[in-house]
Length: 231
Image (cartoon, rainbow, N blue to C red; front, side, top):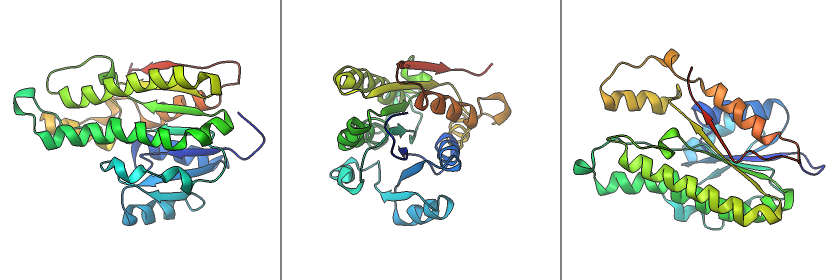
């Protein structure tokens, strides 16, 4: 709710699930979008679905691609919402270096570097950073080691950022959804070898609406953390 300029939101993971619903909601109400796509082909796809959005190509699996990305965005940024993520289940005894590094890159290192790049824009708007984390960032289960480590780290990054940027008026929120009916959840069920029933889990729109609530908070309040669980 900051300033008089049209509100601008940078969203990762807008291609499906929570990110897609959130980007759609923001576009429908006339806000400006900056979306990240992992390839030129993906950027074309996103551009056709979100005609007025600025789409930047940056593969979060290669965080070095984010260096200098802040220069490609003009003006203040009211929110940066980190939604993109990957998961690969494995026992520690069977953990592959490549799988571990991939999850850490996408889920932790890339959000940290993207935030760094956009901080001048966020400070200018007294904006909000939202990390869509996971309840795996609060407690870890067998086979979720690499993913949980990345999400525990993401919570720490949010906590640090909140302390460092409160003087600049930047608000930081971690959202911890439990299992949500997204393509990632379908993939997790496949890895677990169990049938997938999307009606059992939180709907992506529910989490997206929670994020919108955080983004629309009046200036007098902040929500450091919120946990969303299925009934």
